[in-house]
Structures are given as C-alpha cells and as structure tokens.
Amino acid sequence: MASNASTDTTVSGKAEVVMAALDTAKTEISRRFIGQKTVVDLSIGAILSGGHALLVGVPGLGKTRLVETLGTVMGLKSNRVQFTPDLMPADILGSEVLETAESGSRQFKFIQGPIFCSLLMADEINRASPRTQSALLQAMQERQVSIAGETRALSTPFHVLATQNPLEQEGTYPLPEAQLDRFLVQIDIGYPDLSTEQDILLATTGQGDLEIKQVFDPEQILAMQDFTRRMPVGQNTIDFILHLVRALRPDDASASDTVKDGVAWGPGTRAAQALILMCRANALLNGHLAPSITDVITVSKAVLAHRMSLRFSAQAQGLTLQDLIREAIDRLDHKGAAA
Image (cartoon, rainbow, N blue to C red; front, top):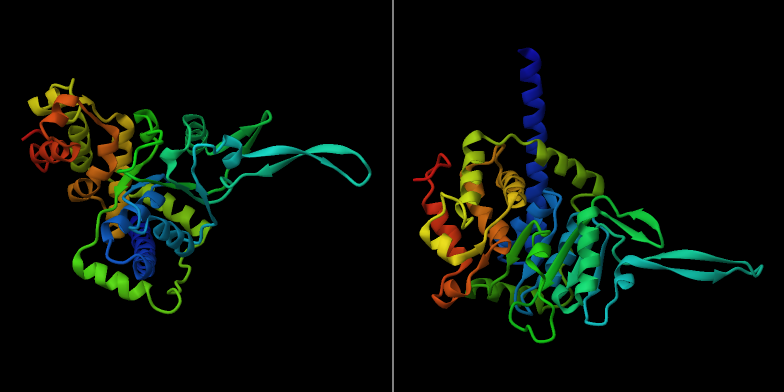
C-alpha cells in the first residue's frame, strides 16, 4: 500500500509540473495569438497527442502567426512550405544531387527537404497537386520518407500544421476524405469578437513585435506525449466515445433517422482513437488528471467533422455536420448509452 501511495504521489506531482508548464505555454502563445483559447488548446492538444492538425480559416486570421508562435514556445524547429500547383514531392521531401569533388570523383548526396524538422507548416495545402499532397500525407502517417531506395526517418517529435482557405476553391485540389482522416483534428478559426479584435489591433500595430519565450524542448514534448497516453480513461468516458462514434454511422442500428438519411459515411475507428487522445490532452490542458465526458464533447467537433460526409440531400436542407454531431451528443446520456 505504501508503494502504491508513493506511486500516486509521484504521478500527481509530475502532473502538477506538466500542467503548470502548459499554463505557461498557453499564456505565452496567447500574448501573440490573442483571444482564441479554443484554437490554442486544440493546437497544443494535437501536439500532446502526437498528431497533426488542419487549420481552416479565411486569410488574415493569424494561422501563420499561430504556427510560428507554437514553434517558438514549444521549442520545435519549424519550417514553412507555401503550397502551389507546381510544387513537386521532392520540394518537400528532398532529393539526391550528383556532386563533383575537387579530385574529380562524383557521388550522390542527399539534400534534405523542409519536411526534416519538428514542426512543418504546410500553407494552403489544397493548392498543391494530389501527387504532392499524397507525398506529404504519407510521410505524416509513416514518419519516414523513401528516396532513391533508401528510407530516412523524420525528426522526433514530428508534427504538421496545415492551413486551408475554406472560401477560395478555384485552382485548388481539395483533400480526399481518406487523406483528411490523417489529421487528428480540424481546427476552424473564425472571426474574433469586437473586444478581441481591438486588442489584436493595439498589440500588433505598435513598434516591433512582442517577444515570447521558449517553454519546452523536444525531449520535454516527447515526455509529455508519453504522459498523456498514460492518463487513465474511465469506462463511462470510453463508453460515451464508442456510442458517439457509432451513432454517427448511417448503417449502425443506434443512428438516428437524421443520420441515416443525411450522412454518406461516418467516422471510423481512427476517429474513436483520436477522441481518446484529444480528450486526455484537453483534460491535462484544463488541470484535470482524468478525462471526462465533458472533455469528449469539447473536442468532438474538431475530431469528428472532417471524418464524415453529408449527402447532397442533407446539404440542400441546410444541415451541417456540426448539427448532426450535436444531435448525437444530445441523444446520449452521461453514461455513454443511448438516451
């Protein structure tokens, strides 16, 4: 018993240290990315969960600023790639070039692409061709690249934060649903409220930019990712996740008539995995040692919406995926069973 008590004290003490550091990180990020608590929490949560995030918002809402700030505060070496229709896979992954030495001998040398970093910003990912998108998304999944018959591991940790403009679709290549599923979360960035927009104007139009400090380093990020995965999840929370995911599948018996009629396909098992990871991260970011159903509800839209597809008839009726997710949550009681 004494040993168990000692272990519990150690875990609790470590959790307090992690939570305090995360609070400091959120404060630093919020000094440059003002008034978007949910966006900041989801972005950090994706990193804590070891996944990638897709940032969706119109131009001028600070997506690039957020990624740059995250890289500084989290202590991750970051690179940025502007995706364009003529971008080739080698422009991201790297390539081999033939070098001639002073002696006249020749040999191939591998030149690393920008993907060899800890935090990659893929700006306007839907502007690149499907071939280039696939090269990036394969590397995101496998955490390695294969060039000229040789496999090279990517940095550890490795995260991609991709941005996408939801309005301007001319000349773009929308990500297929199977590739969207590779992103742990989709984070929608909306317009700030009046007070927040005033704070942004005052903070960003003065002399010089606000300096922020580094809070973590890569080793600490890896340790926090391990700690996040070790957080216990209660059976009630697991049941709620399972019932929620299944209630959004049109061919499942527990799905409502609205889901059966309006959803072309629902979230797969990877969505349930993502929900468990993100609800753990959300609990940690809010100072809790164990995730609850409230944490699942908080992250559900960001985790599930991009893993589903509406039928045209549902779109014509004005339904949205967010509406269907909200309806499914409302139909579940707090034991994770159908109400």
